[in-house]
Image (cartoon, rainbow, N blue to C red):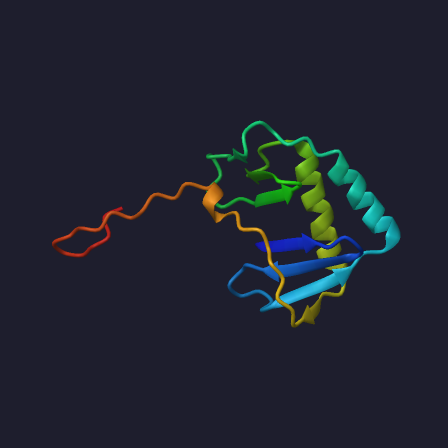
Length: 133
């Protein structure tokens, strides 16, 4: 799974699938009052780590999650980092499995996290044009 979520101030969660073969476009689902209260409670307990990127280098194809709340950002990979973020991710996966995702034609601005990870530029051989790295 690879997706982005955005919460509005009321009861709507916007969803964008990042998996190439997943749902196309933007979808949404609604939270019930008790669900929103539970998620708000989890979010209030978040303690952002000192390092904004925590990666488990021993796992090449693991789950990566990223959060942006009140100008604080964190990206975690391979179950590395504070447990409460991973519990939140498990809860969101449960919601996505049982909530009815509805397509919506709306421009929703999701936070960008690509710049948090350093990805070296490929080295191009100037004579052959081949990628060497």
